[in-house]
Image 1: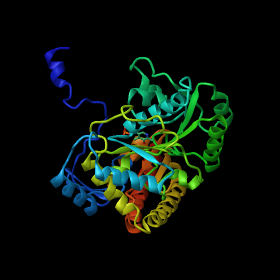
Image 2: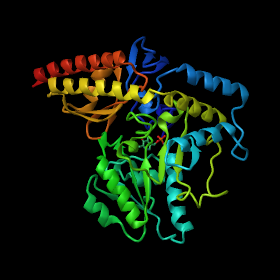
Image 3: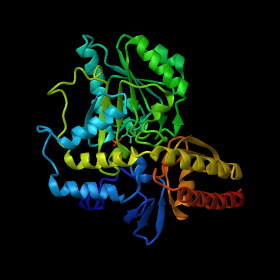
Image 4: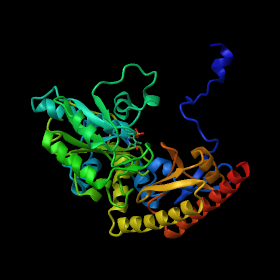
Length: 403
Ligand SMILES: *Cc1c(COP(=O)(O)O)cnc(C)c1O
């Protein structure tokens, strides 16, 4: 590579095809672009900003903690973390929590925990995890192997061993894939990156039965679907079954990097001192944010609000899809994790929405994903839908002209 080429290479490694837009500040559902325009944020930094931007409770919690202590190490007790872990275990199936800085790290903890569980019980040969086509579990070496997507694996050397992928929604193939080395079944209750593909509740129940029958751990990745996104704290609550292991991240920190791996005491029995660690994971700043997010979400009526507003959103989107069948095919998803399956290329739709002032994010299967802040009011949802309608009308007219 010549000197000139080296100079031309971007200082920020170009692993993202970035939109040429940045933001000066955010408030609630709005982001203020450096282009001088105001945008409605219906992507929320990919399901992260569940409480919108600059939520006063979160700003206060973070700044107050920043004045006290930022970081100490997990060598010491972290009272804010003990409190958050207690609240998460009180609110879920789980007995214990490991904090991380990201979703992929939470996944790594879950994968290690699953393997350790069987090894601890005298079956180190049981280390394989069954995953589903279209899955997304992160970008580390193990999690790209779990996701199994060619575009994520290509060029990165041998795929980490221990993951067996089966087609989405094929119960027979799933049963056939269970063998003496199988340790767990890993699934997102709604595939997020895969195109907002919900797993029917009876299938989630079937997975629980299958795991119990074969002595496997059931592992839910609720990194995107969790923390109120579907109108309950976790998506699996709708199915009335609980996993043995669950990863969360994205919205739990409200924008501060935070993830966690939750597990039952039984599943985590092998995870004793020295088996796992993280320098930053669960540091006081992150814990202050996590606790503040829970303070807001666990207030009475919060999830009722999400369910109510989400049903308005879905209804309005269904109307738009019906009026613009040349642009959209269907609405998918549940609560505030919705996808518009597009007839036109998803980038054309996303660009039109942004030009009209609404930010969304692509998902697989030519789906445009909507992940509005859970605090959005019915009026704000209607405002967002009016933008979708306007963009769809323009796209319809354009596509008619070009035939
Ligand atoms: C975003 C996501 C991850 C990865 O989280 P990172 O914080 O990007 O590492 C894993 N699983 C699901 C379902 C996700 O949506």
